[in-house]
Image (cartoon, rainbow over all chains, first blue to last red; front, side, top):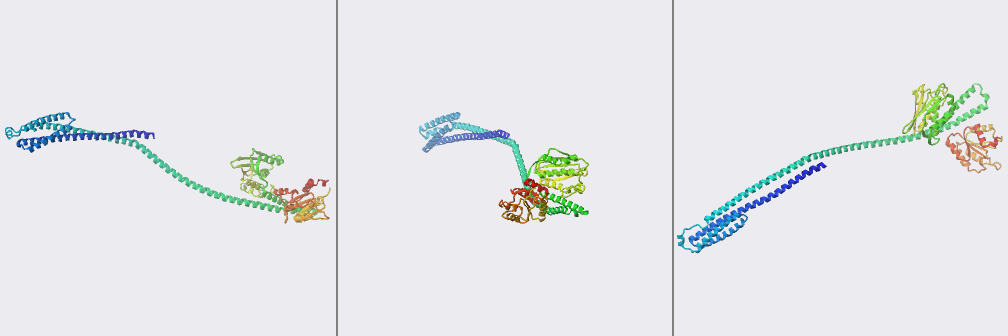
Length: 478
Length: 138
């Protein structure tokens, strides 16, 4: 901007000065021209006046001679008229050349000469007109002789003046035309200069404008792209929301189904218990009332029946407990270190007997169902102990890490391990990998764990090297 | 050891009643066991008079799941009875249920003094005698 102003100012001043100069010159030339023209006109007027005077003198001469020759009064009158005209012309000539002393002197000489001539002629006339006089005397020219020369001289002077003035007029014309030319050149030059200096600026401006337009177009393009992207995102979001909605619906129906299943399991196991209890009760009464009937093989039969009843009772009560998981209380803050301490106290005897090493770092405080969380850790620890060879010293390590939304736990042992094909099977209800003879159990421990973890919106899985040990991994949502 | 005057069993299951009655008799804490197979029957029994006196059982065992008037409904009605018609000392719930909610619900009734799951066994009975009938044990 500064540059633009500087360039503009210098050139502008130059341009304006040139224009003012041109105007002044034109004005001056007009004035000069007019003056010259007036002077020339004046000279012409003087010249015409002199010619008129010359003509009038000629007339005076003619009429004077005519009167001399004829003595007719009408010629005398005509002479008088001419003389009057001469007087008035002379007066106006004197006025016209008042500024020119040389010419005025010459006119005065002419005037005096004429006055002398007229006086002589008057004398002649007054002396009386007679034919003898006329014949005696030679007829002479009265006025023309010497005056004519003088008049011609006057005209010659005026001609010289005219010539001089004309020359002056022409010179002025040249000067004006030259000045006008120079002014025009200056104007053009400054204009050119201005254009030359302004041109890069304009070009720069144009380039900037072009750039701006380009940027604008790019921005518009980007805007359109953004809009499209936005729309895509919106439709994506809508689709996601729809998917979420569907998932929620599915989830709700799943929760409802699960509740129904739990209720079914509860009712079924509850109602199954009753006839089973009756069987067990009356087995007991029978054995009490008829001991004499239980001889030989009958005792063995009753043992099998009793074992089956016992096992069924355990299965049913397991199922019942399973269906009741998560209904015992509310979510609360649980210090897992305290939970682990309680479990250690409960397992006190076996820990001592088998010299179990149970290692864990300081565990976090989590939110969950107290009873269920204790059962989860208890089941996993008791599994780790149970599935370690009796001659091996059990070594159980509990580790965890924290993510944004979850706590991830790992419980490792040095037990018998799990074949890879059974990794998911172990979590099924009543699923067992070993015979009751080798390892006791109903096959509900890990199913419980799975349900408890799912109750806390987590996942559970195992990794294991068969024969080396097992790690159970599970996550609990914060 | 003094014997309880009268024990009332309220349960729709004949086999359970027989078994429970046998357990009580075996322990020898009473000679007088009355059995009702429904809540309605039990209520009318409690309201009945013999020589101007209501039965007023010393100990009542009540099942929850019964056709018709169930255990809960019976409790509602029982607590509206005149004192002379209610049990003398203790009313005990005896149920199939191991549901914690049933246990909590039972505690809401001030006339309920115990909650056990079936079947009734010696431990339960000793426990009841220990807490409510100390003078009978002498």
